Length: 353
Image (cartoon, rainbow, N blue to C red):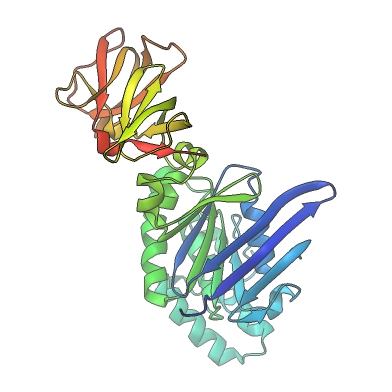
């Protein structure tokens, strides 16, 4: 097995008595685009700061390229960081900003200018070399910050919510550009966000964090389709969660008794065990034949979202249970309707945590 580019070993960190990271271990492969995803307070930004050398962990080690970088200063480790506010120097030209890191390394002016122009071309800003940051749009300033980080050829590029200040349309455009740039340069990117859609759009390695721990990690397709924990199922996209107890298990199928009725789960589980079943919105159906029945419900809200309708319905059998469904835009459902809720057995996710 090849050695990882980044190897985080049993890292914990405390601010005073507050534990913000709890025995975190993580391996980052060369050329990967890793997303650290989680809510505020989950520890993702602290972990990024430890990788960048801005924070020394209370416990554990960080290896980059096989070298122990745990206590190495930011300027001396093979990483650079792109911050949310970009931190561009307003008095410098765009070319001067991009070449600043090379200047600190003692690179001569002609070489700095040539490399700055080359990197600006890489991010689509070849014509901006002589402009000042205030003459650029938010998306362009973001790309300048990216070029400044890439020009020194780091082994790992760290991005701290770099798209958070952009509007929705520009953010989606920059997601496409970030992914394309990462593929061209081949540098490993580690990107912090709390935006699930951003994580799925960018990552080939998604790390879901909660309360200072890693809840789940892997390709975003797997994390979404088969989340490892209940938290991962509810944070990485939406899910309807059914709590129940296993009453029967045979032939690779278990019967789980839930407040909405008996549900068949696609795995053999210990009889008597408590489990949770998660169902993604796109896998719920209303008034459909031939699927697993989950009970009846009354539609409370219908939101048109362009290509689909997001529907909230409350279970008639258990008023505390709310079904979240994603239906075709052409669906005729409306608030007040009573519907039969169902899904296919193989789309039910079994959570045992």
